[in-house]
Length: 258
Image 1 (cartoon, rainbow, N blue to C red):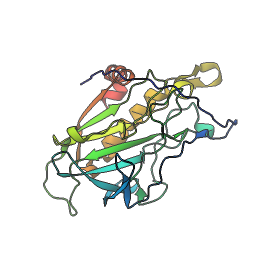
Image 2: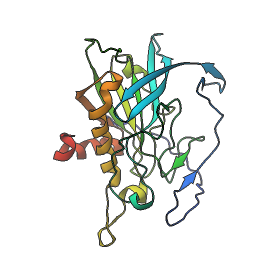
Image 3: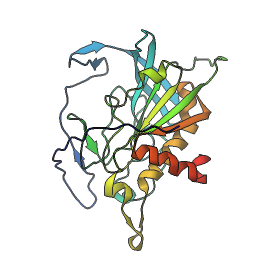
Image 4: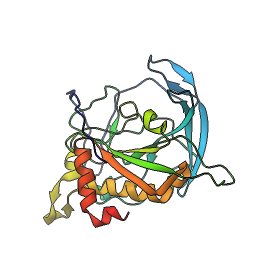
């Protein structure tokens, strides 16, 4: 399932500190959030409940929020799905992450987006360490597990011409899909030269951004049960470059059998 929507580009200058083996990071400060509060649309904080999910690499501490219907749903932001693509892993295929950096990992806030020439969000952070995803789910498995049916899963790849965009939850929320009983995953992937530079003579073979997307699908297959999702019922969809990505994965045998 693929759909396309238009978006307004907001240009701004990006400053970055560069070094041969230095991770590139650029920050624009946003209002502080701690594990007990979340920013509302007005910029003020409101109390939210904390919820725990357990997957193969470790435990995740998410937040409980409200759907338009008033029902509760659960959000886990900034989950790493691969090792940071920095240093020797720069311009290389993504490497599976077998253990979280901490457990439980606080997943109340969005992780930095991948480096981009433009940025839609004024308070967005960007970093080379950007291979993260967000999970939105209407329910979590019980402990001990019950016979509750697993839910269908939809994985979103953002647009931006493969050079801009991010999966930030403030831009791509999932309330209306979650309200229909779907687990939604939104994915960051490498962009621009860091994601698509191709110089085979020096060992840079290109399309790392698409390989990041494929790694996220492997992560979904291995871990989505921890969020109540069905790993055998996954639909990928996207906007613009994200929609094109869907077509490319459909044509790739490796992606179709993640």
